[in-house]
Image (cartoon, rainbow, N blue to C red):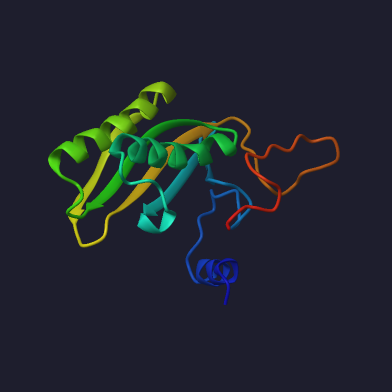
Length: 162
């Protein structure tokens, strides 16, 4: 079973909320009706399998923060809050961690996003599970596109999810 089919299958096993506006794969973020506005929610996990350069902790932190908040932007929203669960390995010395956080901080400051906490652990393999909450008046979804709509891409057509 490929990843898309597996996600659809497992998602179908879970209870749904009446305030969620999107279905799986319709948006880069989950879209929730929240009073007078739409709440956008994103969660991404990053690890060595993503092949980010690990020799520069500032760049690694920067890339993780950008990767996490970009889905809120792609959904037409403004990111407001960032949290992460960080599991470190022996590569993460105190200096490496401080520089890693500097990379995250630089992105959050530029985007005016607040860090609201998270969790911390140790293991043989590092991973960072980042969560971003944002808001949008009119969220963008992949579904419902019509003739004349603009399409934005950030890479080569057909290269997504390689």
